[in-house]
Image 1 (cartoon, rainbow, N blue to C red):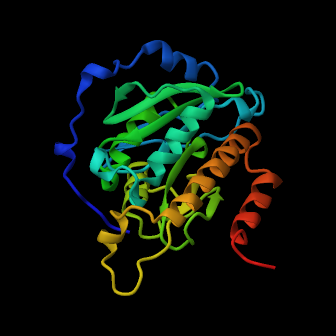
Image 2: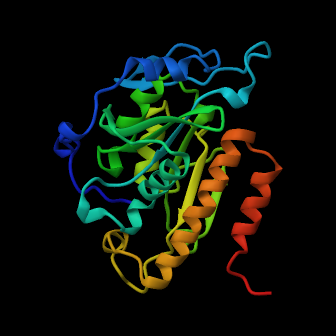
Image 3: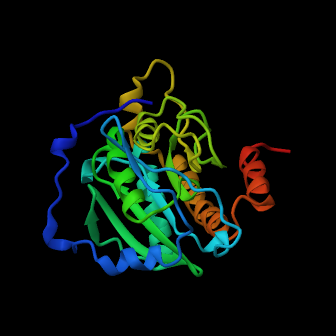
Length: 259
């Protein structure tokens, strides 16, 4: 899935309506973080290396999560198929009472919690094909391990409104997800929530399809999926990849199948 609507240099934000990064927010996340191996540089990229769980450390469920939705900034992309990752983060922020009011590392972000677990909600403003350039520095700064970086994005291989939550995997030709993986040392060990948007009908151009808004029927399916996605993310953050997630994926797979 490929769409590059602008270069990173054009992704500029207007700072008056948002605040600068607050060091106390970093301390909030780091106070609950599990031990990590130190970050390192490789071929000019920032690499975040996952840690081996320490049995003596705090319970894993209190390790902070970085939840990043992929999309393109700007009003003209609002509501398009390629921006459902942004929509999911906005819905999580609304349901959990987290304010998205800080700009850091080419991203709009909010710091809060789901239950007692610290979370960092992220909407990269570097345009979707360069999302990793925004996410990797944040993961390093807040010391979030790879296993707790959840990437949310649109997926053409899934029917519209169908969700899939996975512990790891490839990029499936999604250029935004690929860029995230490349900037995180090429790791496949990234949890991801895929939001189905269907595939282009007939010979329709893929880029045109991705920048298209949903039909009224499709919009209802997406809105329902966003509600279900919030519940799935909450379950993941509080319980990890448990049997509940397996059941969630099974229900999603057959949600539009008639008996």
